[in-house]
Amino acid sequence: MSRRRTLGTKKKVALLVSAAAVAGGGAFVMASTSNAATPQTAAESTVCQGLATALGNNQRFIEGQRSAPDAQSAARIANREAVIAQIKVQQEASGCAVGESAQGSQAAAGQPSQAASASAPASTSPPAAQAPPAGNAASGQQVCNGSTVTLSGEAGAPAASSNQFPAGTKLKVTNLDNNKSTTVEVTSVSGSCALLNNAAFEQVREPGKFLIRRALIEKVG
Image (cartoon, rainbow, N blue to C red; front, top):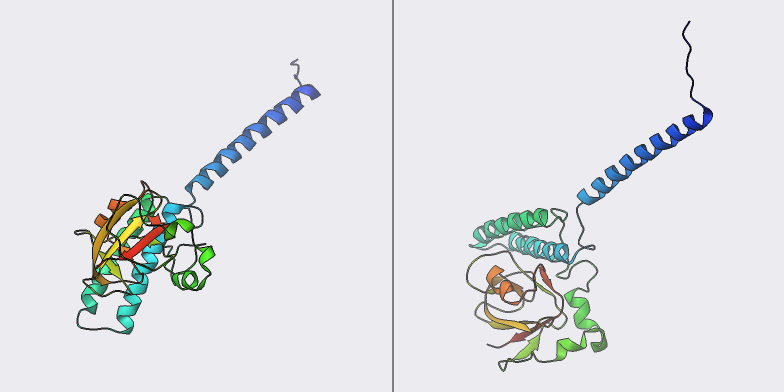
């Protein structure tokens, strides 16, 4: 005659607690993994802000070309669509929400637009933006006070695009966070006061950043 062995009450409780702990740990790991895979938004990352702004600027440029087309609009639009595709690749590689754009404002999420900055009292602008860049004698008329600067994603020699200055205008852009400057010629139209191409942006950027929040922009020619 066989005897059935039964677990004591204390052993049963211990086993149940252990099982719950294992299950809870698994849930925690799954939640952590899920959160880690969630793309960052422009409000959560400076890198994502810069990319969203660059994407929005290019989208605005395309809209402008479509609303007032000329003989070169189709080529310009095709060029900017290629730029947008590259920006989306950069968004994915940086863990950002792919396709997020700061549309309707050249500033990133949470930043004042150019129009708001221009009309705001001088005290709202960073004091350093009024100071000339250190160690650089070449200077000119300060323009676009309060504007942020990002990149267009375009290749080629250092250059800029602008919605305020015609082709041939020379602009000096200084990153006040590291005092690096670049003087470039405006070669095309964009949705910003000064939008730098990749080569020009590399000359003044901070590592890992796609947006210059404290920029001094001067017209020097």
